[in-house]
Image (cartoon, rainbow, N blue to C red; front, side, top):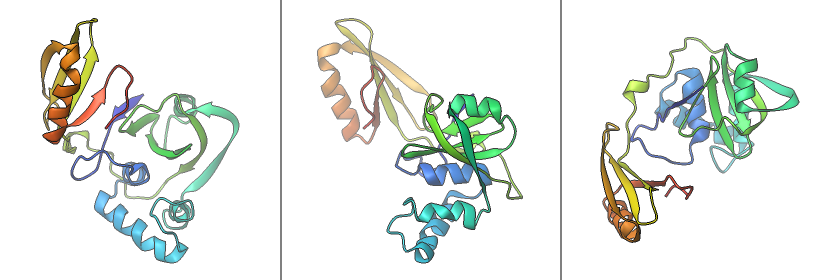
Length: 193
């Protein structure tokens, strides 16, 4: 199972999967995780909070147990095999959190291959509060015919308005929204910007 969760205090979508995963499995505040990872760089000599050297934080500070996998498995299979507990899953260039068989992340990585996992048992623990997320304004586009595209404009509360526009006007419409500080998701398979 997957649930969208972005604990970034401003609701930003950034390359912070390490922080997000730690926040979810420990219940710690995002700012505290950020501060501790940056302070830990002085111990490891790492240049970045998410460098391989600095990720020892999970074992050294959080006392997480590393789980090596005997067989190749994807995230969805891991969740079924480990339906109870709190885990940080390591994938190629990504970390995600699994709590009691549910993935908490900003995207559904269920089909990604798990390299290894960390089991986190620190106490006290409080589950992620999905109602306290800050959502950044966002817009999506989806081509519904050769001549028409559906644009959805989401506000910070995840409510949206929908517009159907001529397909040839999509690029300009989206560009205007991006200049108004909206992040953009192309539902037809394009990249997030």
